[in-house]
Amino acid sequence: MAISDFIGGIDALEENSLEYDFYCDACQSHLNPQDKFDYSAPSWKCTTCGKENNLLQKIEKEFKKL
View 1 (cartoon, one colour):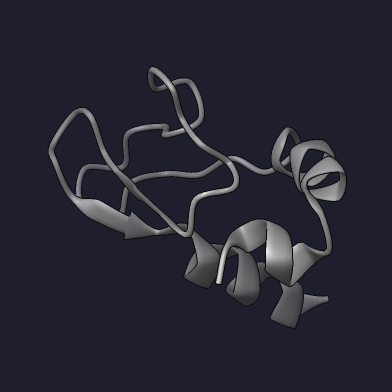
View 2 (cartoon, helix red, strand yellow; view 1 turned 90 degrees about the horizontal axis):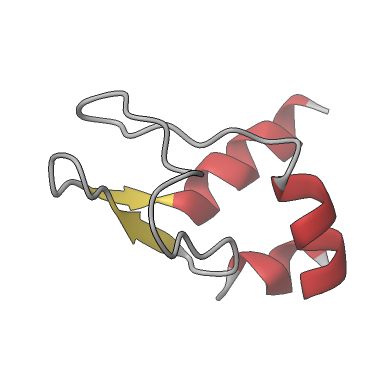
């Protein structure tokens, strides 16, 4: 499942992801500005340390707080 499926479409995802900062679980690098960062991917490999980060899990955790 892609994050866009969870949120309800790529337009909503792009809108929301611009307001949400993703950080690497291992090195705490800011993932959003990393080259070719894909907001619609379920995971992202940090270009700083190589850690695979579960973006879908991060989004789900945020929605549970609402």
